[in-house]
Amino acid sequence: MPKDYTSNLSPDQFALIEPLLPAAKSGGRPRSTSLNAVLNAILYLVVQGCKWQDLPSDFPPTGTVYTYFRNWRLDGTWQRLHDYLRDRTRAADGRDPTPSEVVLDSQSVPTAPMVARAVGYDKAKQTKGRKRHTVVDTLGLLMCVAVTAASVPERQGGKQVLQRLHRLGERVRRISLVWVDGGYSGKPFLQWVMDTCRWIVLLVKRPEAAKGFVLLQKRWVVERTFGWWCWYRRLNVDYEYLPESSETMIRIAMIRLMLRRLA
Image 1 (cartoon, rainbow, N blue to C red):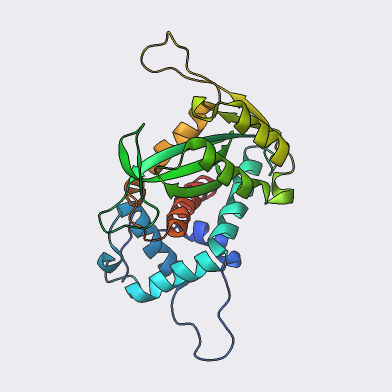
Image 2 (image 1 turned 90 degrees about the vertical axis):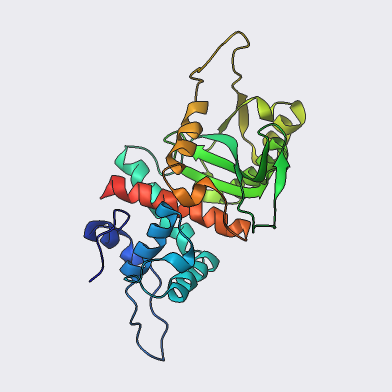
């Protein structure tokens, strides 16, 4: 009998996303693995931060769970689930599915010792690891993320993630403003965004005379999103071999957050 872990999906939450999960392949043996159990195992790993091999035995076998995680990353299932729930969450808040304003920022996190790919040193944050270049809407919901080595400068990583966002086409048709902090200042970056994406960049700087905590317009939204991620132990340190897997872990955390709001 599976245990009722705090990270498990409720029946209503699973019912909300079940129609979007890939159907079993035709031919061969019928699928015997419960997709609900697979999702609960992956959510347990993201929330508790354990190793794949340390998943509790009442979940499906580790190899099976990881295969679903990997296959759904490659076929875009995680992205589709995330985007569907973001649209539903925005609609529940009375918003258009496509935001008109977004906020761009980055977060540097340390990597685990065994991670060697896309690792660098962020001198400003004094962190050896990876950097999460993140775009959120004004509700703090994830629009796009690009994980790079921590040594990648903000403006370079900002171009990378904004290019990804711009390629979404119709899904970002209403965006006109991008809020950023002082790390993205400089005419070349601002001009690049206008020429490439046709968006206006608004710079919000911290007042020079300010001391201690200061609530800055729009910028606090993305900082709150980074704060949400602290509740997911798998995200506090980057354990993933591939940056693409790191991005997927972030989407899974946001999927759980939105499911808890909707159901």
